[in-house]
Structures are given as structure tokens and as C-alpha cells.
Length: 217
Image (cartoon, rainbow, N blue to C red):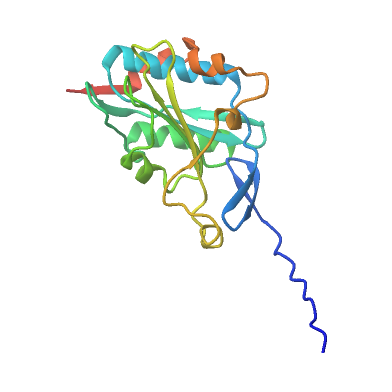
């Protein structure tokens, strides 16, 4: 009796969206392309976070949400409390000023701001995914960026990673215990250079929001 060959087709990829971008998930692998961060937005981000680091040697954080209708990222810099001379920043989204930011966004755009991607600083130390970062980002699908060496170095230290949605059908295929590393090219347009990302002094566009970071000693 001749043995028979049985062809077992692989199941089709699971199609999901992360930060508004389509991704295909197969066991142990995720394929797709994020919507890129425009250079003017990146320069505003650098300009804000670097200035907090210079002024106070303290962390800061910003949140970034992809708006499908306008095909661009929206940003909220919440009211936050940071520890000077240290690596700690905290905020309360239920506080009156932050709740007003979220309510105003929902009223204007007819959708919630979350889920959102994040950018935060390690001031003048190395950029990496700390244990605190891993816990904070675990339930926030999207890309996450840490900025480091913002005060004394000509070239910033940068760490790029992403998180997947915490849905059982997705986490059964992809591990979510740590952030998945990204290359800088994964988050910027092909016209953006490494110097643009790595050495931009930033702009003053968001300096009027510096007051949203209060410092405790």
C-alpha cells in the first residue's frame, strides 16, 4: 500500500490593527507597517521632552493616538508630576485637568483618545525598557519610545518597541511579556534620516505646555 501525502494548509494570518495600522499575526511573527511619525511632529516631541530634561533633570511623558479620519497622529501631553534628579513620572487621568483633556478630545473628534502610543524620557541616562516601562506599556497596544541622553549628549539615545493588543486570540500567537523591539526605520518615512531622528534639537512648538510638568524634589 503506497503512503499518501497529506497537504495541511497553514491557517490564514490573523489580521489586526495596532495604532491604526494593519498587521498580520501568525505564530511567533507579526508583519505590518506602522503609520510613520512625521518629522515636524518628532521635532516638536524632542523640543518638549528635551527642554523638560534640561530645565529640571526630570522625566516627562506624552501620548499619541492615530486618528484614521485625519490620517495623522494626535498628541496629548497630560498634566503630570515628575521627580527632579530622578527617573519617575506619574499622572492621574481621572484628575480634573486630565479628564477635561480627554473629554474635550472626545467631544471634538467623536472618539476616545485611547488606545495611544507613548513617548517618555530617561533624561540624561540610557534609553531602554525598564521594568516600570514594561508594566506601564503592557496594556497599551502600539509603539512606545524612550528618549535618553537628552541633556549632555550631541546624539540622543533612543529605544523603540511595540506592544500588541491584549486579546486572547492574539496573545496565543505572540508573546506580550516584554515589548517587541523596533528599528527606527519602522516608525519614520523613508525621507527621514538618522540625523533627523538622532540629533534634532527640536522645536519650540510645544513649549507653551511645559507648565503641565510639575516637579517634586
